[in-house]
Length: 458
Ligand code: NAD
Ligand code: UGA
Image (cartoon, rainbow, N blue to C red; front, side, top):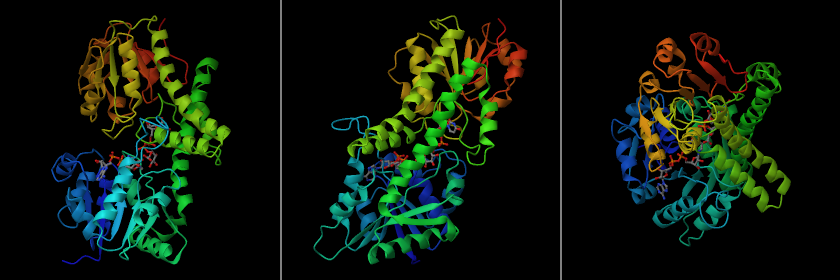
């Protein structure tokens, strides 16, 4: 069968896999190939156990794989045989040299650009899908536009806004699709080609176009604004704990102002995930690069408050448990950075677990999807740790439960049975404010929510 378009994505990760599966699903007339340098990842995409857990992903991969969706390690053939290339490789924070701990590490991205240059035998549209510092497209153009055989590359920016756990819904019904291009004839033509792909299922009014730098910057700004809301409410949660106010009541009252809105205002143990911290630090680095010190400091404080919130959680635990955790058994409910994913990158649970082990507590880690990653994250950390999927069994014989991920299952457990199986006085530290605190207190628990007065029996 001949396909109308041949699309490639380089990078088969959390973004590349689901995004391309959605394009293949919505556009049966296009052939979509996803390549990666990691052969285990590709093997997993071709197996019954996909490399990432995302609700609904199995179904759409099942419907498309082998029909018009293909996963492969053959990067050379992928580049040669496709005219539209998405780049979805990782862009972590740099861990060495100039900008270490702040700037984006562009080595994977640049390697990809050079592979595209080397293996192309015809002109291509190259689309930045990964999150990059503003003006990266210029560097991409400089690497790519140096061929003398008439082969041309048009670089577009098309940042991805999906959130893990709701990726398929976000891809199917996005708030917007953003496409940035050069405003030349060629740039506008390339932009129109990408608009046509998304228009297969996204209403045209939701497909927003812009100049290429605005598009790159908008992605960093969107993540910075979202994270800023969480740090704002978390900062207020600290004040609520001192002032005997209830952060949920404050959020409800404030969020009903239609200019503010109620979303993304859940106080928590802090935000995690592979992107918020990395993208804000990237923004801070850019501001400093342009000499905007005050602007940089403003955005950096979003990350500072997030670290403070995690440390505050530990201080609250220590204070409530007679200032010593040594030898006490503490059960962590949840290790993923949010519910409905197995991803633990930058999860607050990693920090909390390490700090509790420093205090010489014994940890029992529980999570429905993230135990494999949790073992890797805590490998080599000194201390006593066990991993038990069942939250009831995990809590047995513990002095305290720290709820770190808002998995639905934790709301509906038999708390009487859990209380009876624990060492008394038994405490619950609800780092997500998802439990029925009054009910847990009535059963006998001492309950410590975030940003609310604790409910204690002594
Ligand atoms: P990831 O680490 O899950 O996947 C990246 C993949 O790229 C890896 O499998 C890696 O092996 C592969 N890769 C690296 N270099 C390669 C090369 N030269 N050739 C072929 N493959 C190569 O990362 P991710 O979470 O999918 O994120 C990718 C980008 O998308 C990042 O810039 C991130 O900021 C952005 N983003 C992520 C999310 C998210 O929810 N995870 C959402 C929006 C945007
Ligand atoms: C986030 C953005 O929401 C996406 O739009 C973006 O595409 C993505 O980053 C990215 O660039 O990688 P994600 O990190 O997957 O998505 O998940 P979020 O739902 O944003 O949650 C991030 C963290 O904030 C989680 O730890 C979550 O528990 C926490 N959070 C979220 C709160 O503590 N309070 C809230 O009210 C909301």
